[in-house]
Length: 624
Image (cartoon, rainbow, N blue to C red):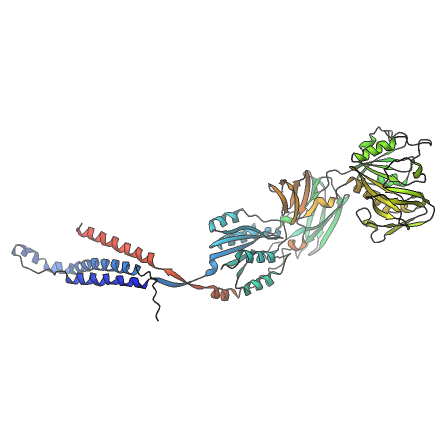
């Protein structure tokens, strides 16, 4: 059985009209030739008239042909003719994966890899378009829209300062495409630093008959960049790498408030890493390499410190000098006032102070009420009120501590003093005791108080019999700690870890924020209370913040520094790993299918032209 190219074959009966038209045309009366004497003069031009007879016959037949083609066309339309055409089904849906990582900012002759990729991406749009931005985590910028909208979205995309994750972007593109016919176009320098291997993912997609095209946007850019930044309260260490095959020189500048604080010139052999240390400036500052090169994203690194740089501490003691005072005085982030009872309002420098406006109070080796220069009765009532309102208190053990009326300020219940040696061992590892993690029994004491921890108390370190020697608890809005190591019977006060311990304890109790929490790498996602956030380039209201730009972010009334700091992403000298697309033609052949193209509109268009031509011809002949 022969399949005719007609959707309504019964409509072919309309061709009978063509036969009727031809029969009527053949049956019309023919003109007769007669000789009219009065027109004899015309015969003199008979020879000339024959020259035009061909054109006259042509014009007569032309009217017939125009009418014939018009009727034939209308008859064919009744049968709905169509033609089978082959076409690329993958053009119906296009998923664009655009690499917006830091390496895409690398320039050659003023043109970045991103500019190159963006231009090619715009040319590849077709059908319904989806756009995925490949950062360290892929983001969908557009899904299933027409070309005009896709062009508008592409024009607004800018490169970020993150690492590259093309593997997950390909998997996301597969989910976006689903079971629909289409293609996935990847525009990148293919410097993939995170996620699954793109060649493995591409092979998996190709096995599912998905068309995946890689468009290489790499170039021959050079780079010297900051790859690492170690920020502490006191100093910062910066690492700079030369990724080139030739030696380079750079000036490393430390800038604060747009002023160069310090600078140094460094020579970098080929493929080498150099580092140097500088004091961490308070507030916001930055490290800058000069001159800049083809990748500026790693030529600058920002530094942020907590808003409050120093903690005020009041040391109440009758000791004229002590290792504790020396340790606290040496701490850069502690502002120390020392007072000798009974007077707490004038420090040892004869300066008037307000004792209960300090961030923390330490009671260390004081004289009791009944002794010379003893503590004033009621002082611990005032200290208790200070703690209840949010203050921090550390009570240090001393021989007569049980006899001192400290009320319920202690977080332990003292039993009696034990005059026997004991090891002091860590019970809980936290920011105070982490320096003792490798050697948990960090010191020894010749005597100590046997004690029991009160409810809610956390024991940081204990004696051999598990009596708490360093403990912490909370009281209403405030915090209290017990330091049970008797310094006179222990060598702890002479160890390098002693000042570090006290500094850590004060910072822990006051709640001093860790400087590491103010310095992040790009690509981090943090959850915050919904609020207005100022990013390096704009402002937005959000509760989930993606830090994908290098620079300073502002939220929670604080400023945070965010930097790229990724050696792999900065290594733009690596050659592209894109493989030749040998499978594309084979896949396209499988995806190419026949499409029924309806010819009705085309034939109706031709019929309209025939009828217009007939009308013009009749008009010219003078019949109308």
